[in-house]
View 1 (spheres, rainbow, N blue to C red):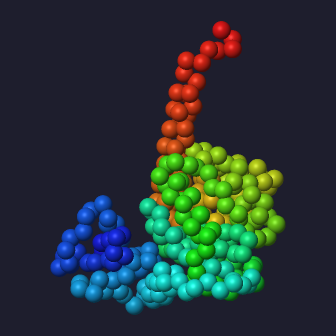
View 2: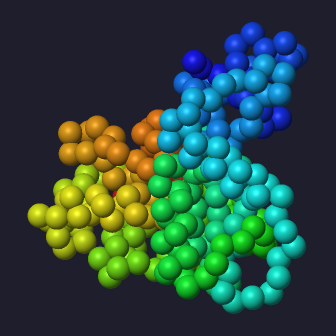
View 3: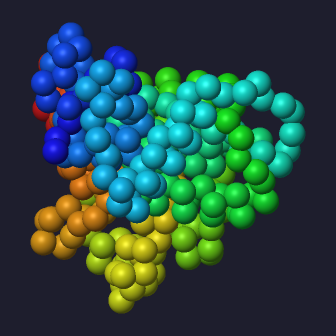
Length: 267
């Protein structure tokens, strides 16, 4: 049973809910109540959309409770062994940001199935505990996300901290060299990192990237032009690539306009 979620209230309803109808621009539809919970919405108390009792639905309830703690963060206490978690907004869904004392440690869409796994890995890598709390770096990240989604900038200038294996770190570093508006194949990317026969390994390294968007693993696609996989959902990968192509096109138009009328050095 599909449900309708309202971004301005954070609530989802079943069709025919007696509550006042929201503006269509503020809504998004999910295939099930479980999907809406994974995205961070809470069920309407008037129409009471029902959840099933599957393990995935139970996990969605736990995810919703976790996201709720991020929306009501406690006062941050000075410490060096904590990753501060806060929920940031994007037009394609909320995103969880974890900040270490010296940089951004995690940026994952809130409905990504592997979010809990990635948080546990971050805990082990940083030898730190997770606590809700917003920091100045969260605010800076939000501003740069806003500029990116508004089409004003395709660059992120943030201190990043994402320790992994030596191979993972080599792959994540190479991802940042793929220009916005461009893509490369898994084979091309494997060749770039010096492992042309290891397309499966680079695919796995990409899937373990904990910094969505700022380390652009979405720019690696299948050799036949298909999108391939994406931890945040293939529909988001398609949206991001289309968004970046539009930004790149506008940038080329601005550059052409700047050069219009400038005499050629060969003339």
